[in-house]
Length: 238
Picture 1: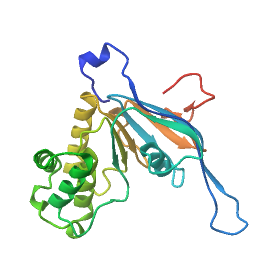
Picture 2: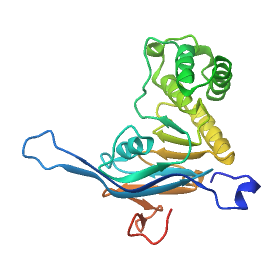
Picture 3: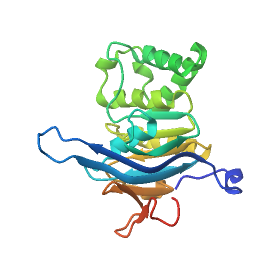
Picture 4: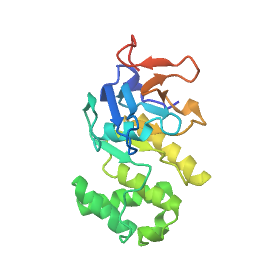
């Protein structure tokens, strides 16, 4: 489980992102076929320094939930309250193939409002941490899948956000990078960054402060079949 500094244990961590009773329905592309209710009252609170896991079956709505939390997809009902800066690592990399890694970081750094020197320093730190220093002048379309994902993750981390929302962030990582990712995640959580990781399954539940299953359009907290429903009908929050 992610460790926390002593100062954070003395008081209740503040909520940095809160989703309440989210609903999302997709219309079928097939004529006369029923629409699909993906989210049906899903609720979630993420506190500073918290490391959460969100699991669910294929088609359960995990990526839809993540896109709504980030703000790139509208919800049909419910609300999301974001109280800090957001870093997003989508499952599909949103990178420009013809740019080099260095140019990519410079571009996103400018978008985040970072000056060139700060972008360069962040790139050097992340490249060293995740192990892609030798590819800084390589075009994105010439990287392996694992190295593309390292750059994708680095873009999310570049501006040192308050909340990290990660959708299958270590897909394609080798074992060494996987371990480096978790070392970095635990360090960030200890420093106060809130992190939510979506994955098909959790291999090491002890790494997380809490795990939620997205099932039947709602989030359930726990690891057993008797998972606690999180939403308007539950007595307590996450």
